[in-house]
Length: 96
Image 1 (cartoon, rainbow, N blue to C red):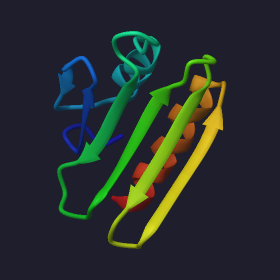
Image 2: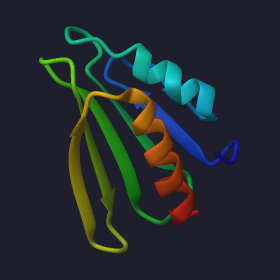
Image 3: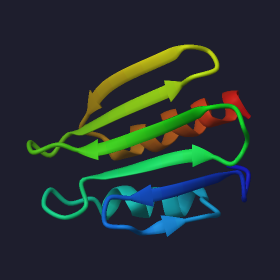
Image 4: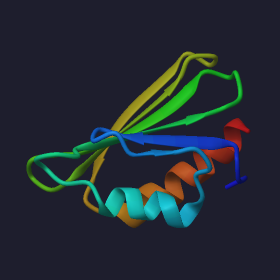
């Protein structure tokens, strides 16, 4: 990840302005089903994309990716938080 390029905001109001990989992992680990069920990651660049990772009631994660510029939207469900980090880091890099 390029420091200073991404920001994250959690449901409980925690905000990270300089998101790096270790912090990304920590934000996923901090999700809980009662008070902090999702984190939204966006870029500071004006290219219109975001990712939202939600913790579901069954303990799995829902990953939504939106790219308004390319008209693209995807939702997937996974139980592996490490796969989320690796997958989204690549997706972020593709979008600059």
